[in-house]
Image (cartoon, rainbow, N blue to C red):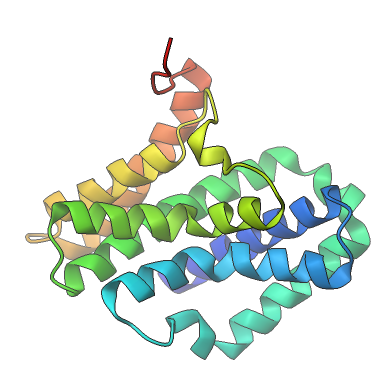
Length: 198
């Protein structure tokens, strides 16, 4: 079940990357590059941090080809995909929670402490989006997005995994992913945001 959700989250990330390329007017190759970087970039950054080389995603040929397929579909049918903004938001949030939890688990397996585990989890969830924004010439939205807890939600989820993993590993992964999802969704509904300079 977790593997299915990981695939789903990865492909949704690919769709958001491809949509960004379409919005920027990139050609087909540019759209596919953004789709791929967004889909597997976060996990690849995490793997580099914990010493897993080459990154795990590069061994998964079916997943990589599926990411390219999603990029091609978005390139061809982008008006229809853009109309699915709300479902994509919730699927993106689910992917964020899953990757934050699984990234934290990878950090724990590498023997990292709470700071390292939180960083591995957060970067696993948001790293692809950061690379997407940089490649498309924008300041990464996680640095200024108001009213939408994204990186901070992933950070909290990763810390939940760290706190619970020793006694109940599977429950810790579920709780961490759930914490991320709930914090992002209800944070937006309640208008929660981190403070900014006056």
